[in-house]
Image (cartoon, rainbow, N blue to C red; front, side, top):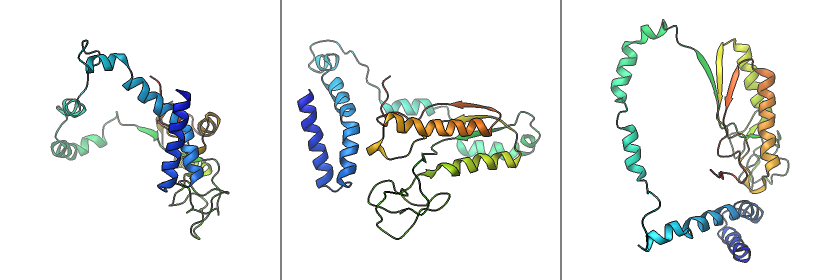
Length: 231
């Protein structure tokens, strides 16, 4: 399949470029990263004998198809009515204040730190992620010290400042949940090493600043290529 893969990859790059989805460098990097995973998924699914044979009605069904809508409705069937639940919470408000079982936890998710963030760099540019030294400006807006309301990810020092703030508040946190998505969104020039660097940085910062247990799990952005996990 290598020659076919190569042809399809080049076609995808040209379509991305001609349609002006992104600048050519981003199209090349994004397609280069994802094309093998995408094409392998299509190949292993649609060329799977256990799918083809039952589809042609030559053998019994091998896979059990799941109706996602029905499954969702089944899961939510015994969910309490939101208005009734809200009423109960209001009625029990005083009891809640005296509830000795209440405690604080920390939940960290989707910080998407950018180790290449640079204050003063263009915050609007010709790529999906800006606020970097190499960003080519499309306006006169600049990256702020602690972050930017723009096409930018979070400066790593802002995460450090957040942890410092938690320490200074004196809140007694029992434990933390860290649910991933640590890397920046620059999927067109990511690598195993670059993705790992963000998680290592955040891990070291947490180890320096918290004295309670953190329970971590990976998000969809930790893998390389992004969103690709083989279960």
